[in-house]
Length: 233
Image (cartoon, rainbow, N blue to C red; front, side):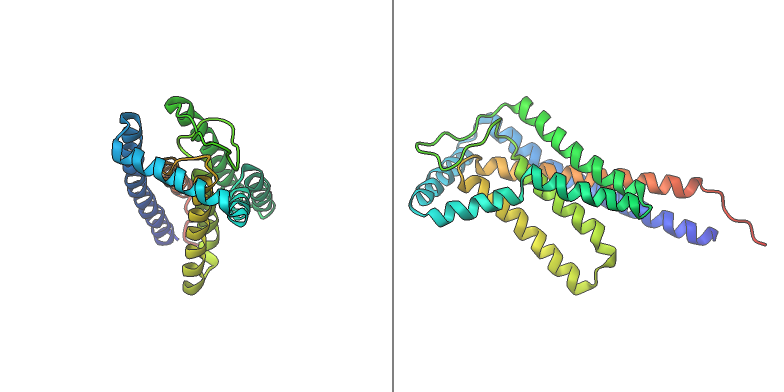
């Protein structure tokens, strides 16, 4: 029993270390993007403005493109996430997994609050276009849709991972990445975000998910270590 608990604690510790490394790797590109946006680095502005203008011109000529982008944007909306993850949290509580339910709820809610705080601090205006094909309220940096997509689909992968076989894990990872890319692209295609907003949202979402995973792993590890060990008969 003691050996089993030690092995479990070691696994939790290894996951926490990996999550901390992932946090550092994700935080670096976000910090770099924030610096470049604040510094108004010309090459980045050129990418942002070029993508905005080119995609808007294409969208004005192709209604199907706008419809597809709006559909992807709705899939990545807060309404969809609150319904889906609210149901998942309730199901986890019903299955006797309240700590995992708390992990899901805190990770999703915390991500939304973090995005609001960073947007308020950076205070970057959204793109301005003639005859826009879509409208969005609030500020621009980082993209809430991109950040939420990384957190949401990352969470789904974490929850499903233990029950998936190798082929299913690969398929699920590819699907999650495609959804994140599609949702992020849709925000630029609709002219409501810059490319740098989306990239920053993805980086911040990855950093937040890594931080919460590390915190949850440490919490479980401490709880496992605090349990009284069964004495041999």
